[in-house]
Amino acid sequence: MTLPPKVDYERAGRDYARSRRADPRIAAAIHAALGDARTVLNVGAGAGSYEPDDRWVLAVEPSATMRAQRPAHAAPAIDGRAEALPLDDDAVDAAMACVTVHHWQPAAVGLAEMRRVARGPVVVLTFALEHLIAWQRELFAEALTLEEPRFPSLDAIAEALGGTTRVEAIPVPGDCVDGFFEAYWRRPEGLLDPFVRASQSMWAVAGPEVEERCVGLLRESLESGAWDRRWGHLRTQDEYPGTLRLVVSEPEG
Image (cartoon, rainbow, N blue to C red; front, top):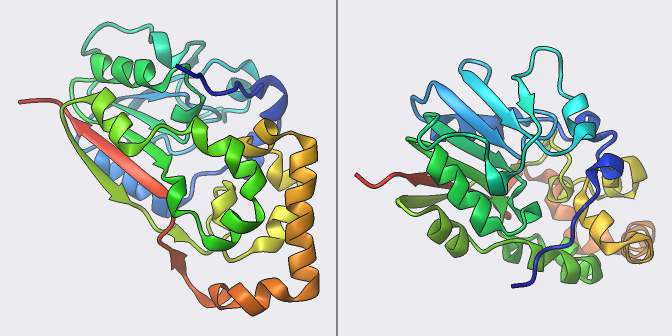
């Protein structure tokens, strides 16, 4: 089994909380999928995006840099890894993981751990990159060659979780406040900002030379007008049915 390359969040995550904020429309879908769970474990919790504030939450996050960015009112966070959760079986009503499974070593182990500790639903927010918007797939092709193998397929996630599983497609709002790279599908100029890219792990995996070439292609396309000639219609759309997927597993019985 080939494990995904690790991203050093002690360096790459320093300004994460400033640009990777929870979008309320995406949050609403996640919180609905948690059902009536009163106790929730957030795995790979980062700076706390998407944690519900009307339930008891415990966060697990291995990066001290990320834990330090959690706001004062956030749920308590412990130093731990998805692949070895420090909880008993059936310890919480539900478990959630948002845009993190592609970092786990391997993902299947962390997903099985989530199923082990949750009595009820396990909710995983991830990307199905084969549905990435055309201009990003074209201009970022070199980086995506390195990025795509990190992501377990939706079928692999469902298999690892077991139980009864459903997948929900979540449209990406045109003014999405969570700064993952697809969030800029109608605002391509945003991806020219190195601060924005600094909180997108794809660039840490790709490396500075690949990043420079991909961003150069985007800048050239924008400056020449080619981007707007080919994809300018996107600027008037309110949302895009792209890669964002919510995988929800309910236990058997």
